[in-house]
Image (cartoon, rainbow, N blue to C red; front, side):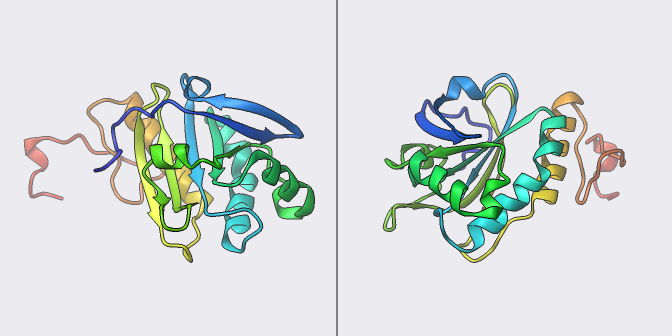
Length: 187
């Protein structure tokens, strides 16, 4: 079953951000755009390249009013240790959520049950807590934060302009489409 257009489920997890531990719930997420960025595990190989890429784009996300939540089935303590040990992870200014029980990962339907690890799942959530976009890739396929920025901009545009849609490769400022009978068979 797809989680697109569904409300995020309640959760309560410990997180690490900028040297502090704190609790995060679904209520902290509502009211602004959010990206949940699930990854298999700390201290691995592809994961730090992805998290570092998102860290490099974090200022752009913040300008768009988007908060980033990275999530793995590690603990918030492990996130801190990784942050302290890795130059790449040390760049991270966004929230790193620990999910040792896997409940949050299961809420987003991206748990590899036999391994107890999250898939590489990216979820764009609107200010009402509704999932607007999902991308899940296999273990060895890293994601691109620049394309994620583009997708968030498209989701925000569509939300702000009812009746318009963003075509393939849409970039901010480019033409959109207004679905109608007049377009059928003409694109």
